[in-house]
Image (cartoon, rainbow, N blue to C red; front, top):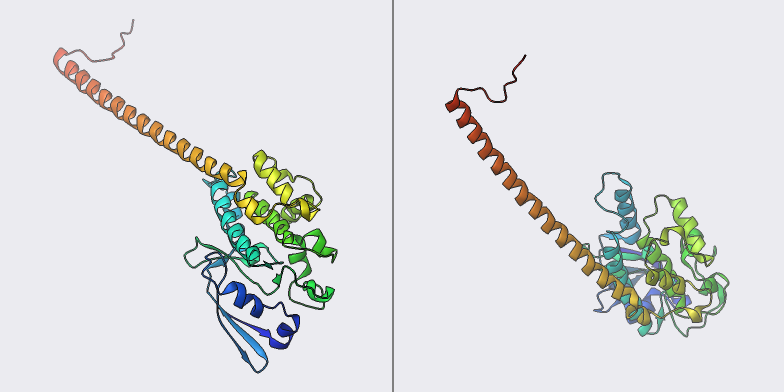
Length: 305
């Protein structure tokens, strides 16, 4: 995949994907989108990135459509293990970025990719990334503003932390806020775009969205903590990786597997019992036929008076 960018605008910001690419993107870290090469041709910067199969927004739309089908075998409970597995990969990528002293600043489903195999999740689009201690003018700090034209307001703004929207100073905790909204989308299969925006805005106001009420206390408390208006009260990416959120996930997967095993054993037992009943019926039919042939008396005849 090749992307072109105005080189003068990139170099002017000093927080471009060139800076990000050298320091972050070109890395063996498996959950970071890879920059293969870049070149400046006539003032236009060309960036060649690895090819991915789809982004998380596409994946969520397809999954939610499947769940809306009345005949779907999936449910809001059965999707949890896969959703948490995807989120843990995203979180691992974010933790790596933060450990290198960078903030992504534009985490949303459209910027989360799946590898060509479809299972490996990668954090992408580092065009807005900046160093944790980077000082910039307000117009450069907030590239979704109209003068930038890089990102549409309604897209990024929905996932932006309050301090980003208010053009206040901020740190890597802005990414944690965005991740809280992404995790909510992973766990809650919204049926319409209106429902999605309404529920995410509820969360932004500090209220628990109705779609989250069926989830465990640890999941709910973690998401509410990630979306605290005060960034100091939000957990770090590293703290989240070792939190009960994933202990619960592993426990949940173990319990689901135990339930599936129990159901399989029950079905096998029922199938065996059914085969015994069929065998017994066959024997009874043979015995009845023999008795009828040898007694000369019609079976199950009714005497009429």
